[in-house]
Amino acid sequence: MQVFDLECGSRLRLVRTQLKLTTYGMAERLQLPQSTYSKYENGSMSIKVEALKQLYLQFKVLPDYICLGKFPIFEGKKEAGHLITDLNELKAGQQAIKSKLDFWISRK
Image 1 (cartoon, helix red, strand yellow):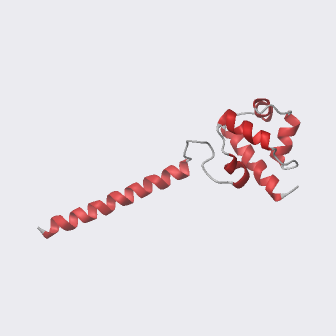
Image 2 (cartoon, rainbow, N blue to C red):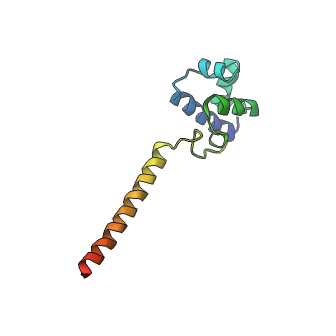
């Protein structure tokens, strides 16, 4: 078992649980035997390119997430952590504008 396979497997498990699927259900959607999918998840087998392709076609799961842990997980979606970061940046920008306005108003 390699660390890479274990990391991919844990990310696969996370995706499956987010999709509310059993290992059997996920294997079926990916057109794999359940035993093969389980081996991917537990890291005893490296995920094949065809399985990554099916993950994308079926669920829009980005291969960069499964293989490298890069976000977002799903194409076209932002995860909560990224949305919170965006919101905090927006709030900081609003605060900066308010400070500048207050400065200019106080000078009059």
